[in-house]
Image (cartoon, rainbow, N blue to C red):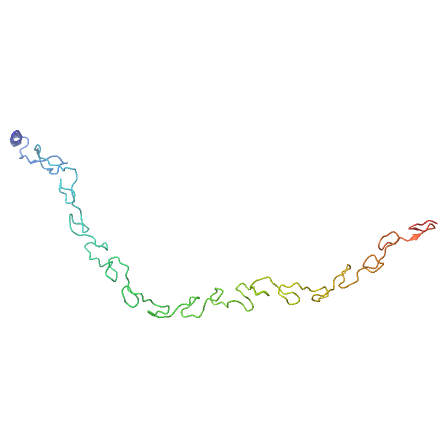
Length: 250
């Protein structure tokens, strides 16, 4: 009751005032309130309304429950939604594969079959049998040889492997076994200095194959002999009246 009496008194004051002949405008004069009236000249007590949590929802309703959101079409609390393709109010068709699955992976093969396995060969024929050779030529004839070389000639004639090794006398590829001079694989027969297999000729002390070495009485291979002083090839002789080696006594 006291509030209403105050309102009536305010109206009478504004109405009777000579300085302000205009009729008073009732309304909330608090700009922070939901029902703020910028034209109000009378601020009625307890008339302003405030949001409970100082938050308004998307439609601007002051004090409304803040659960209204703008949909993908920009409508507050609207029902439009993005489809699986990301299109607002779409029907999932813009990203559907050939089987109609949104964001699916199925594709048509070259025969037009969705999810089929038909492919185009190197000649451009769907389900054709043309193939590419090792040189990258469609329907080419190059093949990889036994050494792994495309268009190669394989193991060379006489060789036993791709590295050019040959078989030894024991049949081992790249082995070290050899025949002796008698034709025996890994035998022990040898050729003498005269070139005779299992011969007996040897090099003598003078380096002569089958030679007799230093001649009897000689002291070297050149036929020299020792002088009276015992020097091989020396020139000392017995002389002098005393008949002594190297003497010159008279």
